[in-house]
Image: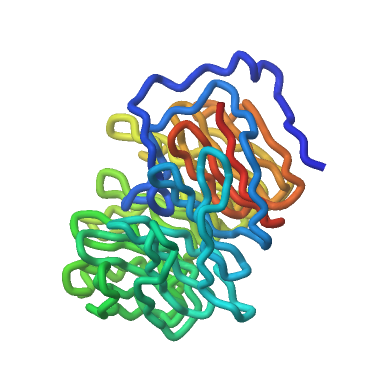
Length: 374
């Protein structure tokens, strides 16, 4: 049974500071630096606006552009759904075998929506018609999400490569090799794509030609995507740590390890930058959501859920929005970690919330896509 659960004082929840409304969340983590932050505002209290039955589990996180939400499903469908009503606009079949669309999340750019599938095929689909424009076959499954920069689209594959393709035509431009899967989505900084690898190396690949500019050993198998602010990359690892990498110095600035709860980090971090520092928030497989000081790596607060947190949080003003495998979507206060609101779906949220045009959109493990807003 699904129910809205309200915490005490929820009706008095402060409205986020007035900012320019942002109608789009065009890619995984919203921006090429993957910070998970938006200037879009949300109402003081979230209400369920609509639910769309996608027909199969949703691990993909939605892209929302010009009033349309795009999301992949484990049945191999890429769906375009009207963000205001939840009405299906079109459905594109990426794959018809047992390998659907997993965690790869769509990116919208230049009239196309890009996504990878578990059969290893990368797709570019026309946003108006839902018809395929081009495809590119890698040699293994794709769980990474695409990032578009200029005329180039980047995608990682479990065949151990990060690919650069022409965004309009799908023409192969280059590939950069690693020694294991490329699971994470690359974050862009000063013309370079940065990502932690399953080969325990933090990689930097020049976008213009695919040449490597950084190969920093971190002794940590990494699936989470880095978030970058002020030249520092932040991400969690399967060595049960959160690390901050100084890109210019090519060194680890700090490491966080909880002495009492040592579990991997799969969730990607969100960064709320404040002057020379700020707060990073991410989920852990120890069932907790944590906030760390970006300058020092010291923990500011933690919030317990009842299951793993693999969803990556979004930061909207003074609020953090994140799902948990316990079947709940949470809204927390950024400063204190206090729970402000929750919604119980009854199925796990491993996808990440997307925030655009005054609403939150997220899918669950039972194949329901939700929208919350005014």
